[in-house]
Image 1 (cartoon, rainbow, N blue to C red):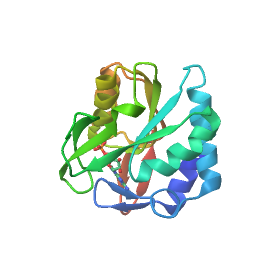
Image 2: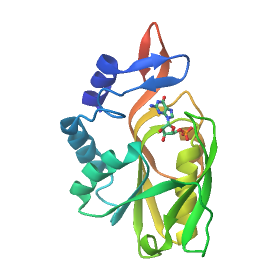
Image 3: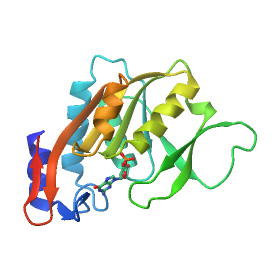
Length: 190
Ligand code: 5GP
């Protein structure tokens, strides 16, 4: 998606070998006009899938998912990063290793909101090692819902998550795929 790549070139900041900050438009301040174009592009790519629910993970996925859902006319469910245990068995739960903080945390969704009747599109801001996406896929599988695919805004394709999850047979559509990045030379796209 050319508009997104231009914006990453213009406003993205590379920290060290593998962290891209996009706080000016995606992860802190949100550019709603850009998010609308992102939403339309996801809707175009997954138009044939019968999506009736979008699943994301708090916090950064929520804005992307909420705007995209307007084009699918479906609800958004966001997985919560929880400290608490699955007390009465009322939640699906999985564990995710955080890319940005390194910590392992529990991620939950209520069983009320995911069922075998759902055709789920997973959305997230970044794909790196694939831990967040693995966790969301696990929640969908526990519920018996159908996974239609995953839409990612920025895939760091030099990290292993995208290839590994595609090899599992999951349709992963990324709007910008980064081949390499460096604080001095910036970002190169595939
Ligand atoms: P993964 O689980 O695929 O290793 O990492 C994906 C998650 O980590 C995303 O939900 C995102 O929040 C965060 N993340 C991974 N890489 C980056 C990055 O380069 N920049 C930012 N801002 N977040 C990232």
